[in-house]
Length: 127
Image (cartoon, rainbow, N blue to C red; front, side):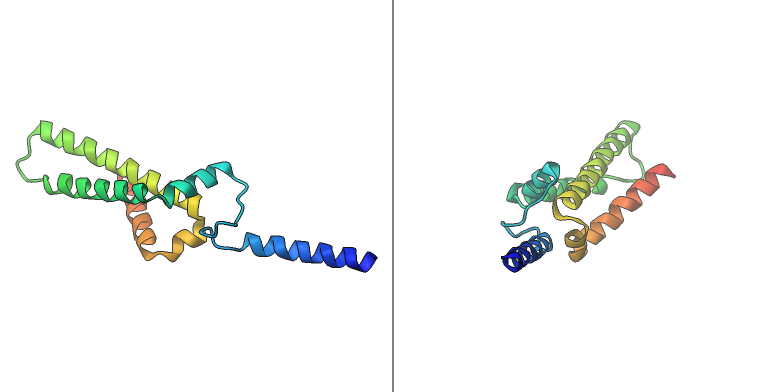
């Protein structure tokens, strides 16, 4: 009887450990952080990807507006828009890191490129 109880406890522990190591995309995985659950549901939603693509295209358009003889008003508008885009990309990185976890986030080289660009923009803003 005691042996059955011990075997059951060992099997339950192994099951918990294997569930913990499952990829986040697995629908059976459990996450203790409600905010992480929300972030994951946001990241996997197709609208999230669409919104990020729209922001990227808009950022490209604003960057293309930069020229030598730009008026002070246009410069202020483009600087403000670039700041908004920067905050959007920072938010994207944070939500993806929370929703995917660092290991899953780092598996995609585009995420690493995005993170490099976000960090570079933050460093540029600081200095």
